[in-house]
Length: 207
Image 1 (cartoon, helix red, strand yellow):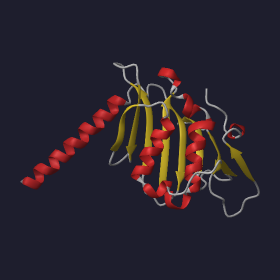
Image 2: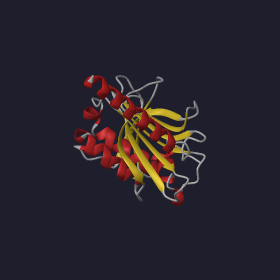
Image 3: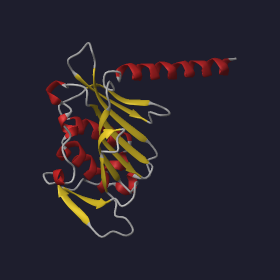
Image 4: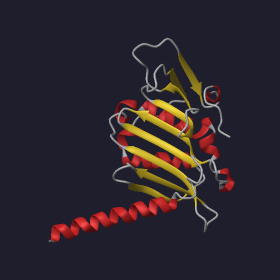
């Protein structure tokens, strides 16, 4: 009987958690998500904003501009690729707003399709990218052992899925830029070296 009651409590807690997340993201998902998706081995990092919202102080600009969030996260992932590829989790980041507040909010969930563990949910600070890295590095220390480089090496993706693939644009959509991966494939002819300022040559800023 006790085990059955514990099961019911856990089940109800999961339902409440799912309801809270759904309410928090109602505004953010009014239209469609846009942003960045990284896939490397068993690890997936998705950073989204809503293209239907006007964020206070244009907080979404850091995600829309490839020279900011995209470059910083890509350089960190590339520097620590071996360890990151073994992290069997999906980390989903959502920049959203609430009807009763003029602030922007940042929600970070681990494994949103299964366990839905909330790692952060609160007012977004001035540096969203830094806040994302703080969560990643505290949750998965091995992901940040090696310092990021001041350049990112991009490898052309010849297949629909390539190691360390970056997708930048709107989701779901076939128009997002998924032309580059962060890991050298077995056979490649060309690679691109991009600094923070030059990465805009390969990823166009989102409107």
